[in-house]
Image (tube, rainbow, N blue to C red; front, side, top):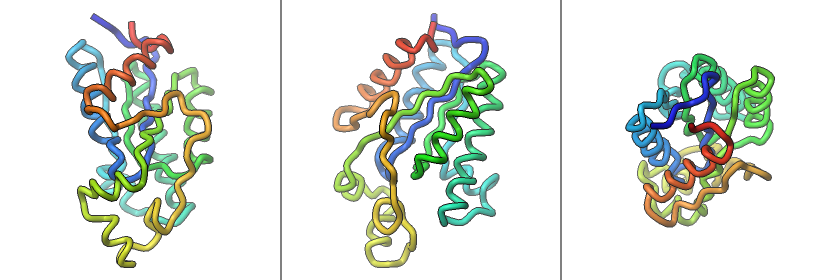
Length: 182
């Protein structure tokens, strides 16, 4: 049986819409909970319906969205949970600020870039968002009409070409190497 360190940690899955962030997060949570680990999943889409419903999609609002997600993740991590965040989080500055906030509190932070190519995300397009963005119906859509700053040195650049289970196992290997799993 594995146990998380008493301080917890945050695993931050970033990537384009349709990259597979939520799928990997759900699989990771399921696998770790089967090992009796305390996890808490935070999905960017879900938080935009409640906590972050007051935010738009301009750069400052996107940065504030990431900051708030980071604060919630930090709260759970500080009480021993492994927070699993799946959010586009398009700006380096936002992700870096969340990492710095975690590190200044002595809490582990793992950045996973779900590095699915734009063409693959568009082909998946589970919500039809890319098609709508290409028609001009969704302004400021990340990867189409708004930027996505690819992480320069993530803890893992995750390929989602294989099965979701393989991707989850790749994340687990990184967590083990970082000493976040017993």
